[in-house]
Image (cartoon, rainbow, N blue to C red; front, top):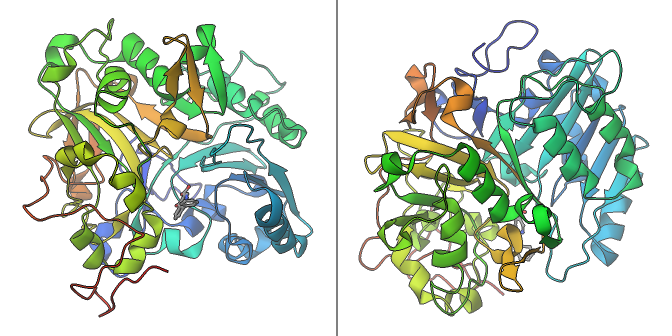
Length: 459
Ligand SMILES: O=C(O)c1c[nH]c2c(-c3ccccc3)cccc2c1=O
């Protein structure tokens, strides 16, 4: 199959990878024709006859969300999984009270500074179930003029009886999804765990990479966060020789406090995980180029949205000031091939591209920004991994898509074919120019006007 084949046989994607970008409004149609989906496409009757759904997310505009469902699905049971507390929780629940089909599940956030970032849809149909793992908040602006990503599962058929072993995929998708959902320890998710038990997920070819709050020790240490990625790269990653000179790539829309020096966490613990190859994590980190993609002030200023795009790129001056070393790794947001150089990134992706960018040893699309809260930080001499937030992503390895060696890549998808990976941005990356500054959301930007002729004067 060439990706999600809807009942009418309409192909919404050109590849079995099922990795899409969201539709960007206001750009040439040709850039929204292949490997793109709008929120209404995902919820369309063409994907299945919906009987219930569950939306895991961070931010919700409830009236807008309800309008994204086709009229005939707006009365179906809808569970919203969030991490809000206090007034924010009350406000969200008040918004939902207007809809008798909406129920809520508040994810427990016991660690300070934790957030429920995970963005996932469970879509239950009369003939099966689909899982969508993505990067967009359930609010209009996130689906309008930004670069966002998603993985849409094949239709998982219903099993004749529930099973934790039947319906397992070569990547352990069903087991790992159940473990992730189980980590919430929430009674409101029991029915959805049962639905997962009841479906055959053997067609899933991606690995789940999740984070959940807690101090993970023993064998659980490699079940979440960057240690989960380290374990998967150790078990299924590229041959050491193949990627010896290949960069590690990180692309994200916000950054946490990573410590006073690159050796504090970024270029030691975190890079050690992402640079892991088949069979070993012992690679000379000094020889591994680290390439980070993060929008410049001018990328935001000249974007389709203008400076307001920066309202979803919350990099604080208080954090930036503490880690000037980070800026030496930064590269511009460039997506000429996908027509998205002016659609600011809210997608988060990580991978191992060849120096030319023509090949890719693995690729992760996730909710996780570049932060210790999301990826975890080792404690107690590396015996436990402390994670603050819920995050979720899916990891693509070539061999699980019948591709020998590395994926061939393209950032120009109008000729997408088997085994070619549709990148969200242009590779090789483009370093910041002299004078380029990273976008910072809580300082004024008044030197030059944005696309709409406005300046940026945060309160
Ligand atoms: O999970 C997500 O997608 C997002 C999570 N937090 C965001 C914030 C924020 C920053 C500091 C404190 C609280 C919220 C601001 C703007 C966009 C986002 C966002 O997009």
